[in-house]
Amino acid sequence: MQAYIARRIVLLPAMLVGITLLAFVLSHAIPADPLAANLGELAAADPVVVAAFRQQWGLDRGLHEQYLIYLWNLLQGNMGTSISTRQPVALELRRRVPATIELAVPALAVSVGLGVPLGILAAVRRNTLVDQCARVLAIVGASTPLFWLGLIAIFVLYYRLGIVPAPGRLSATIPSPPFRTGFLLIDALAVGRLDAVADWARHLVLPASVLSVYSLARVTRLMRGSMLEVLGEDYVRTARAKGLRQSVVVLRHAARNALIPVITVIGLSFGDLLAGAVITETVFSWPGMGLYAFSSATSLDFPAILGAGIVVAAIYVLVNLLVDVAYAVVDPRIRVR
Figure 1: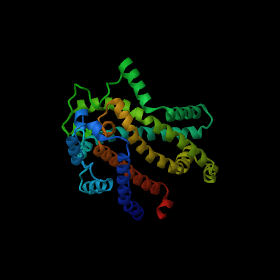
Figure 2: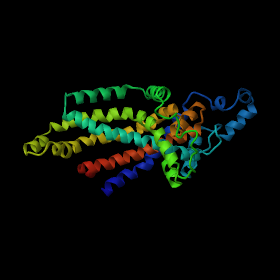
Figure 3: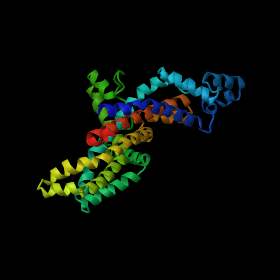
Figure 4: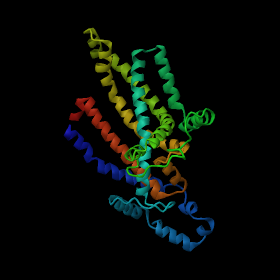
């Protein structure tokens, strides 16, 4: 197991360098000029101001030179300075990444906690009402746009019924706890702010639920299909012929083998949740990395766009590493590859 994990870790630096190059090229491939987004019309018409702006942010140099400088600074922990806010990008991401993780992790937990059992149940009771409901739920969940679902949820549950709080991370009447880790739950518990914890939990329910819909449908559908395939294998029929209980056959013999392709989807779903957080955080005014990336893209803030993209990609790479390790735990045969 140690050798298997070591081989995966050795590949991480090359993957991260490739990610920085891809993110840099894509961010500069946008057919727009940051001058128009960050300078007024009068300032953009002044050649002296334009030259000073380009020199300050390194826009007067070649792309290859800009990339090498950025990569060298990145190795030293310097992600540059935001053009829009004039604040270090690393500092702003340090404050916003925990908020996104707070949103993505519960959404993934809902997707896995409901999707896996629902997929197993639908496969075991194939062509029954439970199976039909699970398939309809998977189709609807996979085809529903998150931004539309979020707006409808806010309109019905907040505006019409008033059973959920207003969008945001905390109510306007609840002061934020002192910043320590960036995770509001941990920071609030550290100073005994149970009121902030309760209010944060109430605000988290709706955006996390909306964000989990697509990945829930994905996990349910794949778990059902994988279970149906495994339930027809010879070793499952042999286990039943030996007189084992249905629960033992399904959970111990079938479900474990059916989880192997589902683990891949779970890892990919976490990346989808980070991408979907851009929409969800914008709709629900959640002050995370997605909202930061959206505002940076609208203002053509290249350092902020690069920083957000690299952080998301790095998290995605680490999640894939965990998926590889989970593969080896579930299926020992993978360790020798």
